[in-house]
Image (tube, rainbow, N blue to C red):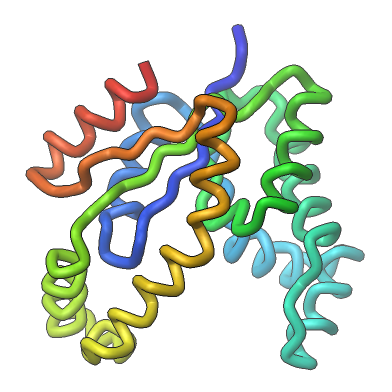
Length: 190
């Protein structure tokens, strides 16, 4: 049986965290978040982790080959997994191409890029609401929130085109009850 490898996208406030937790449980997937991976590799003081820490300590971005190496390690450590849900990765077309190269070599391609789509006004409302209860300062300033949404849109546009050209991009209406949104995601996965 082929693996269910998914890329989950969504702007801040789209409900990505909630929905990814459900998809992980429903389909038995392994969550692959680059932020979590970086922290784990640094904590374990692996060769990749030490290289990443040195770069991050200088304020530099961690290059693609290091991030891809960490993802390869995680995939190989979970060869029994039914699939992976990629969260926060890929962020660029070059990363998507590298990920495809790695997965296609194992005949375990990305099945779909699921993008939760929520109108900007609704995102702002959700994040301001979250900011009021969570205390997260980046969720309390409307200008910062709108900037984060624009940043997301600018960065993901090339990825929508990339996965769209492969017939794998699926825009999912991210407005409605949790159950309705989950149902749309499950239906899109097929």
